[in-house]
Length: 85
Image (cartoon, rainbow, N blue to C red; front, side):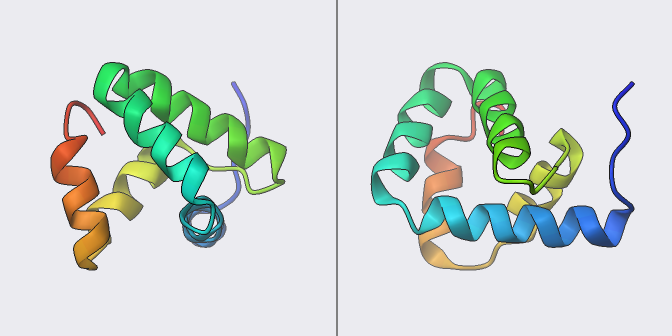
């Protein structure tokens, strides 16, 4: 089993990774399209990106962060991609 950082570090990593993804419109669109077809694969891809960017995250931390978002753009994205994220 892979060891993960403590919860506060996971939350910080997840927020930083989200901002990095959100700052790349092409990547955001690619993840959205993937989420429509393969939500689980999208989560796996996000987790892998976290590792690649030295921002380790877990599925639970990604789900928790997405659930906590309160901006309109994110809410609309999540409603459209709700299929498992």
